[in-house]
Image (cartoon, rainbow, N blue to C red; front, side, top):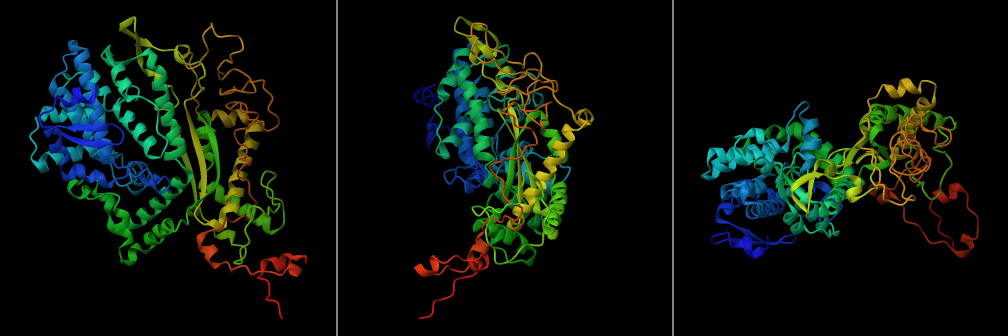
Length: 601
């Protein structure tokens, strides 16, 4: 659907210039929803939350994302209406889809997904609140507060489209329309089309994917939206880009550190301001946005001193530090969640500190050997490691997937072909690609310390926990240890193999029961591949001998390591120039730790 044809359907349309979709036509009807306090509120909520503090270009807000989703939703609905008149899509259907696209994110709280995925679960323990619920609440408030005329059945239909749940409205509504805004069947919808394209563009990594082609490709078969098999690669690229964005942008290690600092600051401030209790009051929720940070910073109440101090650390970049990280295979996620906790790490860190004080070796994989390239001299002396508490350590598990957790999203999409436009079927790996991972999801484990003085000792504690897990997995009780955790099983459909026409040299995708030294599959307990001592064989990734509980060789530091921080950097004395005679004279460690004395004439 080109711009001219989409523009002609409007009477006296306004136009909004958008960096992604160019000119977006706005009908008077849609404008009546946009020009409201409820929708304008989205101008003050960053699309990527605190990721803006890492990616300066990611300054876009939920406001423009809603415009983009409304635009794409209308284009897709009109395309189906014109190309398949037998579907009997009415102008009312198109309008409801467009309004649902515009209003689908009305309920987002400050810093978008940070609010409902991190803050609310801790601030309101046991609450099942999610931003989709708030979107329905704010939509009702928008209609009531601005006197917009809307048929009650249309209102229910729009809210059902936002939720992607046809059960929330009349069963007479067309089921395939629920695939447009919030597709619960396979996750391929215009919401994803817009945010993947928009987020990539705003961080400076624009995609070369034609959204117009995706619109043209869509057809309704078997009461669901299907796509041309020629575009399977495009759809797979969209899903892969989603995974890439989560791994590189949304879960950036610094962005995550700032999220946990924001969490601590808001939890502290909430004890006094009680803003978490405003979720179900639309008139109060209307004013909850990213300006909450400025509200706390500009306050003078002593009750907010702790929150102000944390926010100041964000401003001066004195952030929580990531001491270690590890990518976890999907089947092993429960083992790590159960065993690698802040409490266990602190317990082992204190043991390591005592061993360090006695001069005993801590762990073979965490050497005490001083690394002059990593360690930092600190005139404040050795910190008291026994002051380390569970609250000083953060263990973060970030789930990253292609849109359907560990499953391939394309397994849930039906395709048609040029010669069979009225028949749809699922596509196999050989129909678009034979190089498929065993799991389409992984978990990124990161350990943070809130106090930089505890950096090295926290890593030592974390690695001691891994060493204990490694010991348990290779002991005689391995079967009992592993069988205490549930693992998903691969079905025949999940074991991907290339078509028989491929040359013999083409590597087959590994299944859980295959053995090999390479590839992306997972090894079985009975795998015969030899990866050396300490190998955990049941669900180990076959990646050059890496065991599931191995250490990250790229992050290893000594237990006494403390990275530089803005606070300590300001206290360090300025270095003084030395004469050539002094530079040629060897200095002791004590001399290096103190400023050189000024030469006497």
